[in-house]
Structure formats: structure tokens, C-alpha cells
Image (cartoon, rainbow over all chains, first blue to last red; front, side, top):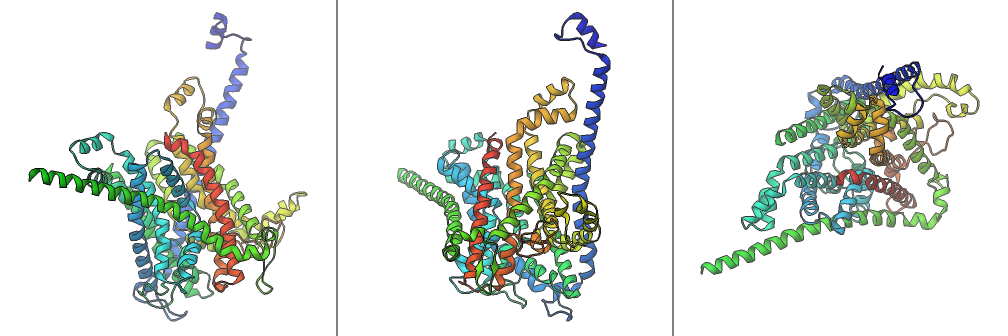
Length: 299
Length: 316
């Protein structure tokens, strides 16, 4: 109706519109819209289906291998009812030391980018390199630490594994620290400076506190990320089938043990690998959810 | 005396500032040094292989530890083919998810679905490898591949892509697992950039009578094109260097096969598999490090392009 009245008034230049053509066009546009919507819904459903399939497989097969001995016994030869104790402890040690080394460095780099070098050329290149390292293949970081530490000092060691994980932690902490510090309003900084506080006190006593939740989220996400890393540990801490907490010796870790066991031909090892996979996924997802809750509480 | 304490306090403050600024700058420079050290470390380690084989290292399909002949062609080919196939599978799905999350999903559903997609990104890669090996490979071997060989394999011109025995493992399976792994990265980036479109633009298009899809196609995508490509490149960067998931399902054979079901390898998978069997400082170890160097160069270029395309978004 509106089309005819408008063209009658001469408001729209050009040939007069045929109502039937307009209606058919409207129908086809509407149909195309519905098809795309349906496809997008299907894509989301497929994505969620993948997640559900992974979790269901993990729970299904992981529960079969999970028992108390998994937590009380170290890895043993096939058929002798071994557990994963040394791998669990090794993973905890390496992840925590890696995070402990990487976090302060990442924190300082993030501080540098947010507080000292917002638009300087050096700052921009540091930000760029850190972002590239954030997505760099982790296997290459393993090879690098192998070249730097393992090969010259003649031996695989847990400390080499910790260093590789620390290199992965740094860019994650840099990213979140910078983002969180940038969210702090300039007025807060000006108020602190106005009280006569030096810049370093402003950063450590005020900015860090204001950004505490965000930075903690970054550290937690970094821990979750490196806890599941396998490739860099293959070349550094190597894995160890015996109980060892010596940082200068090869050390077992959950992901590497899973890798060794899942590819084996023994059913009890494969079951243990699934149990380990379930543990590590639950741990990683739990840390992720906690990190989100921390962030939400802070904002 | 009071003046003295004020002065010393000021001097202390200066010292504190100088030390803190020095620490921060040193850490910043440390990141640059780290990247340089990674490049140099891999290049130095790979130097004997580059010296022994020269430029032929890149085009040689040989990987023969007995005769000490090593070439990078097959792993480089496998890395690129699996990554690109993974993108072909992942990009439409990731786009659909991002579109659904920003425009279609009801408000109460956005957060849980978004979180679920992000959790998919948090699952460690070795879990994808096990899931691929124990769940996807049997499905490929028993259902997908026999069907494709019987139907698509008979079609002229493209039939060779679907030839060969249905092992379940192979290039297509690896690409599929890679796709599942990079979907959350691409979808999350796309969702974030879609949300940067000013609502006024979209509202004016809706006001003109555009459908949701027309708003997406003619307002949102043109506005975010560079960042969308950046997000896709980010996914590509992830796929190129993925190790554990690929090692489980690609079949690990040093051969270029024309069939999508044929086995192959990638740089990351051959390094992970052959490393334990290589002696320190041997030519084989050096070849593996040289492969690592090539992978680093490829992913550095991809990630650098990705960052440059994504930068306008982060600045805004």
C-alpha cells in the first residue's frame, strides 16, 4: 500500500513498483534470512555437540579407569595395577614453578606496556612480539628450551620443563595485566600522584590493587593453559616412570604420561590414560570457571 | 632536620621510581630478547642440516634415517594442507556460532553458550588427540570413509581425493580435529569484533527494513572485515603448530598422498615422534630443529599478519 501511495505522490524517483514483484522479493529475502538463521543455529549446535561428545567420552571412559590407586600409586609396568601419583605430583610441581617464574616477568612486562610505554615504538614492538609468542606453537618453545638448557647441560630435567612452561605463561599474563591496567581510570592515577606518591608506589599500591581480580584471572588462565601442555615437556622434562621430585632429573607429568599410555597396547594403561585425561580436563575446566567467577566478582 | 628527611624521602622516591622503571623496561626488552633467542636457537640448531642439504632441504621428500637423508617437503606440505582444510571446515562453523551469539541467541542463552565455546578452547590438545583417536577415527573408518570411497570416489576428476583404504586416520581426520580445536578461537574473535559495530549502524539498517542476515552481510561484515580475517589467521596460526592432536590421528607416514584419506605427517607431528629416537647433535636432530625453524617462520608470518589486521580493533 505504502509503495503505491508513495509513487503516486512521486516521492520515489524511478519506475513504479510492481506490488507482486515486491512481495515475491520480500518472501525470498525472508526465506534466505530464515535459512541463514537455521544454519547458524545448526553451527552452534554442532559446536556444542563436539564439547558434549568430548566431555561424555572423558567421563564414560575416565570413570572406568578411575580408582583410589590412581592417586596412591606411581606408574607401574602394565598389568601390575599402577597409578598416576608421580605424574600428578610432577604436573603440579612443574605447573606451579613455571607459573611462579613466568608470572612476575609477565606482570612487569604488562606494567611496562600499560604504564611506561603506551605509545612508544619500543612498547609497540614488545606488545607485538608478546602477542606473537601468545599464539606461537608450544612445541617450538620446547625445542628452544631443549637447545638452550637440555642440550648444553647434558640432560633432561624438570627445571627445563618449568622454564618451557614459564615461557608460555609470560605472554598470557602480559596480555591480561596490560588490559586490566588500562581499564583503570586516569583520575585514580592523578589522585595518587596528586597526593605526592612516586609512580612506583602508585602502580604497586593502587593500580595493582584496583586490577587485582583481572590479573589473578590471567594467572589462573595461564596455569590452566600450561597444566595441559604436552609438547614442550616432551623435550624438556621428558617424563619419568619412577617417583621423583628432583628438579634436576627428568620428571613425570600428567599430559606426557597420558601421551605415553594412550599410544600403548595395554588395556590397563589406556584406562589409566583416560582416567588421567578426565582428571586434567576437569582440573583445567574448573580453573577456567573459577577464573571467570573471580573476574565477574571484580567487575 | 625535618628538611633533611623530606629531601632523603624524595631521593628514596626517585630511586624507587628508577629501579621500578628499570625493572619494567628490562622485562619488556626481555620479551624481545626471548623471541630473538628462540629464532637464533632454532636456526643454530638447524644449521648443520641446512649446510648439509642446502636449499634442497625444502624440496626433498626423503626422510631416511638410515642413509641420513632428510627433507622437509612432506611435513611442510602436510602442515599447510591440514591447516587449510581445517580452516575450510572451521570458518563457516565459527562464523555461524559468532553470528548466533551476537544477533540471534536470546539474551539468557548468550552467556552459557559463549562460555561453553570458550571452554572448548580450554580443553588441552592431548585430550583432542585421544578423543580423535578413540571416537572420531572409528567413525571415519566404519562410516564416513567407506561411504565416501563408494560414492564420491567414483566421481571422475575428484575421485582420486577419496581413494585408498579406509584406515580412519589420515589428512582429512587430522584436519577435522584441528577444525574442532580452532573453531572456538575463531568464533570468540569474530564474536568480539562483531560486538564492536556501533549499534546505530545496525539500527539504521533495521530501520530501512533489512533482515538480520542482510544487516550481517551489508553492515557488520564490511565494518569488521579486516578483524574477521585477522581472527581467521589467528586460527590458522594455531592449526599450523598443533602437535599432540595431529600426532594421534594423521597416520604418521612420510609420504605425499593425493587422497584425503591417505596418511601423512606435519612438522609438529614428525618432531614430536622422531625426537625421542634422535641422538643429541646428530644430523637427524639438526633436521628436526631445522623443521622447527621453518615452522616458526611460517607461523610468525601468519601471526604477524593476524596481529596487524586485529590491531585497529584493539586500539579502538
